[in-house]
Length: 331
Image 1 (spheres, one colour):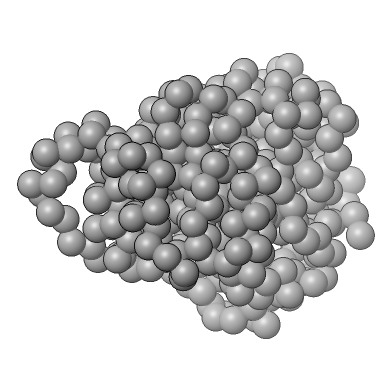
Image 2: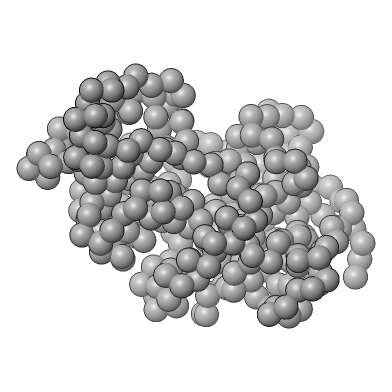
């Protein structure tokens, strides 16, 4: 096997034009790891933030961009059992996804769902790990409860809508255009409110006869926080995964107390291998059967060859996407 590989590099933190393709050493699988030959890699908002210099990789992680991949196992590290060279897999990684090869800890490895291609599988790990841990673990969403997804047409948003709908919840979404609203409704959202055209709190309080929403998944924060607190139901859970509209918020603590609400949030990248492995096991048990039955599938907007990684980043940054963007390393 060649000891070098192609991968994406960055001249300096800043615009997408600084991304380029170069060659470097191929990583080696150590004990408890596998080496994956990457066929496709997902492009996510955290990749953009890292490119801008605002999301450094955790200690020991690759500084190559890319948090999710799909491909074939090329080599096994010492002590790895239950997997074989040639197995079709997808995986969450802490970095290194925009490359021909990447090393993956075994607990973060998942089989490509039966009948699914590598492009589609590469759009699974980052968004489904994120949605599962935040909506179903931290947010404790149950069948029969309601979920509001901000940014419903994003990769995270489309994933949350489909998965919550499939598991028996009533789903609402906010979006920035009617085109995106239509997509959210087609994926299972009962209501998709264009926040540029109307007040989503008033609309959803009317829709729910004043009850509100049990769980809110928010990637906006900033001025959305006060609106979320107005809308959250008694004993509701507000879960933050990003702060695209601002990191500073104003909390009316008496409102929080009256509603007995829980406000929480998380990041995924710096979690331990053991934590990520637990999420992977729950996904395999609860979500993989939905993929294999054709009940849900990642919503993919665009696919680019690795050489066009800068264009892919610019498209994700534009917020004009519906669903995920994927890099095809076999193109």
